[in-house]
Length: 308
Length: 257
Image (cartoon, rainbow over all chains, first blue to last red; front, side, top):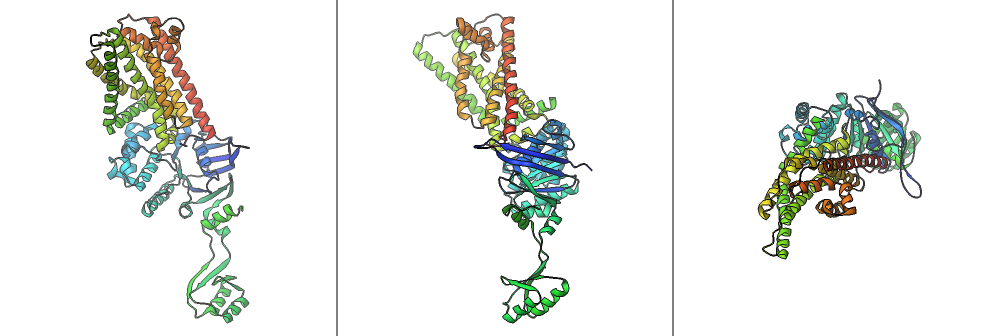
């Protein structure tokens, strides 16, 4: 099936001295219906430029963007398939009520006034904002404003939703609500391109992850596969007490290592049981197979300049 | 496009309804400035001075100046405000695109601007005793004036799009506009008379002064010049604004403030 978003060979350089500054250098992205792609990278890596090239707000020097088969840089009609919540922006009019914002942007995005109002009311109900439909947007909480911005981005039923830092600046409860909303939308078949610096959010939501560094994609894979690739093959055992020298000798003979008060063991489960026997009766705090999280993956790829 | 026009009209009314004191303040200040100037002129000329049609011409020029200020400022101040508040990019993300959206906003704001300036005109007439003829034929050259003013609005809008902060420039441009509109080019000799045909809005304003203050007859040839002037500057504004949209997208400058 053809992806909803297909970006190929995107390049962008900005004027600079002594040489132009390359912001994005040959980025390819694809997002299918019902999929959440987390697009991650440190500040200045080229995320925002890429997102804005996808949205038609920054013209690429090379490459092309297709949203539902149409190029937003050549065909403004392509924007009918796009909704966007951009970071650092209010995205909606604070002097308007939520319903007025939905009606206004709905018409600007091609709906009839009647349809925009109907669709707006249904989104306000779904997002738990219907009681605030006639309150001024500037009087809503930050979390409500963000949910409204997402509702406005969805009012014309776009096939692709761009979410640039959707949980930034939200308290825990509001961030959880937005995360739940993103999950729901993806389950309904919405293609979502998400950028965030909150890697826990990305790990919780993304089906796939793409990591950009200095304008180039350094890793792109399914989230689980990427985590697996960076996870170790060893077990980690944390103890409550202190290991005596005799036990350390025994552990070494079984192939385990002791580092920073933790026991690391490379081997099968039979061997693990032998290690646990050697530790008996010391109280254990934690036993787990080493598993990378997205923060570790990100730091290894971005800080150490690695590729995956 | 009718849907766009209707929703932009609703938007203008909502903006107005949210901040009615802003509008009231504008009317009071604009009226008082003119009344202050009028009292100053009468003090210099003496209590028995009769200004006659010169005062009427001045009133027409002043009210047109405020009308043009609103028409032109609406777009450039709007772009700066939206860039600062973070809604500008959402306007660019619509299928209509910025040119059509701002054209519709200008058209939607026109009725409100006309109403506002009619109120200002009536108050000034009551205060100063000026007798301006509200001739329906004057609406024809007014159309040319408005076209040209929206053209200049698009030019300043293009500058706002690129530089984002042009408040100081806009303040100064008010006086340039005052020169353009208050100067009676149509009654000046030689080169100045010629300038009255080519400067933005000047032929339409001159014709309106003739119709409303000096009781002159409608001149179809002059009307055609006023109309051509309006279309020329509107076209120029639209072309340069569209090019600026391309440029800011090229340079990635749309969202920055």
